[in-house]
Image (cartoon, rainbow, N blue to C red; front, side, top):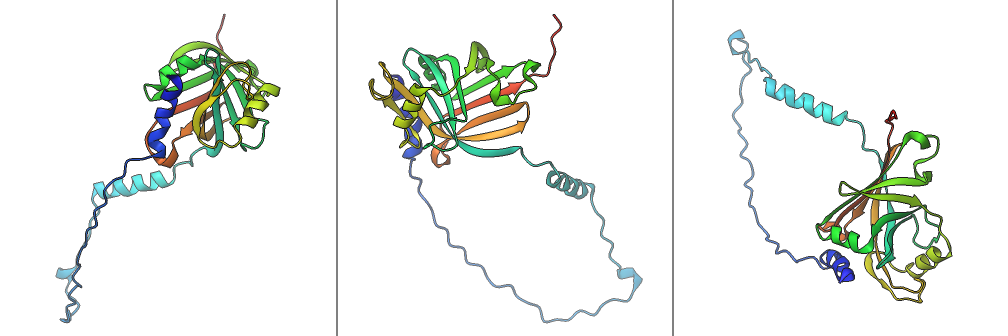
Amino acid sequence: MTIDTLRRFFLPCFFPTPSSSTTTTTTTKPPVLSTKKKRPSTSLNHTTTTATSPSSSSTSSSTRTSIAAPPRPSKSMVIGTIFGNRRGHVWFCVQHDRLSFKPSLLLELPLSTNNLVREMRNGLVRIALECCSDHHSCPLRSVPLWTAFCNGRKTGFAARRRAGERVRSILRTMQCVTVGAGVIPSGFGSGSEELMYMRANFEHVVGNADSESFHLINPDECPGQELSVFLLRSRLVVNR
């Protein structure tokens, strides 16, 4: 039942509904040029003064403001894989190359696979991982422990993990998968239980040294599942 739910989110993206295209032919008549010459007027009474309305000035100023806005934070595309046993925790893996079995980020989330699928049925999943300012000296991805929230509800603590032999075997089994969801049977790199997985391209956005995020990119730019993972470092100091 859970794997059918995962596949249901991706099938509309692989097989979009064909839309009927209508071709409209527009005939444009060539402009008629006037051959009558106009003599320039030398009288002061014919002087034309053009006034700029406040609305046009405000529009131009707003246009200049939008052009002068700071650029969007740096972003890139990575490969994100969410996997886990049916009754186990969900893992989130980030790779720059699917042929490399050493992920750049590996997190064990406190969510179970069934809970994640239940949240995905609503079409919107936002996982926020927050850490305190005690880890301000280390890079954001090197923080070992996070407080996890899923759609605004606290779910526990997430931990950064190293890719062991089991994780590398799972990534080696899925190296031919670019985008999709499925099940790896037991004994094929998944251990003694079946492993559910979902792999897709994610947009990696780096806001600053204290914030990063990963956003699921739906295939063919069609609307589908919205899933985002946020890494945030809080600068607030709580007096105890």
